[in-house]
Image (tube, rainbow, N blue to C red; front, side):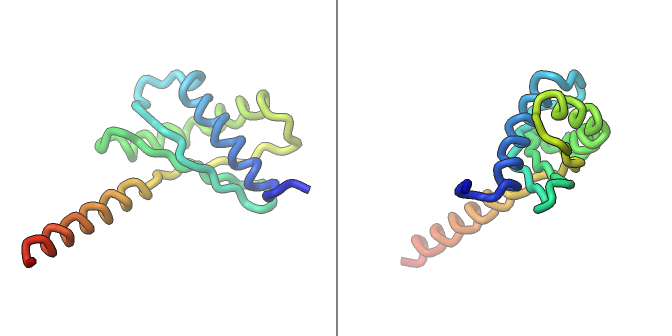
Length: 119
């Protein structure tokens, strides 16, 4: 028995392969610096939400649209690379966890400064 679920193993594999496809196979000059941060796969492995982080602030929405337009190409590349009976349909989403983390860090720093100032 494997130590974790099949859906988790598939999501890890998809994250690696999709990142490679975006980096080396997708020849769209409009795509800037994109990082695949995670993939959530449903239990039945039919749907996969791919979370990406985009470096440039102004290009986030357009990059997600470009990736969603290219998802049929990405799925066909996945079917060539992976030995799976069914390749899940994919949906690209913006990963906001890094923004959320930096906002929390900023708030914590402000609290520390206020505490140091009042002492």
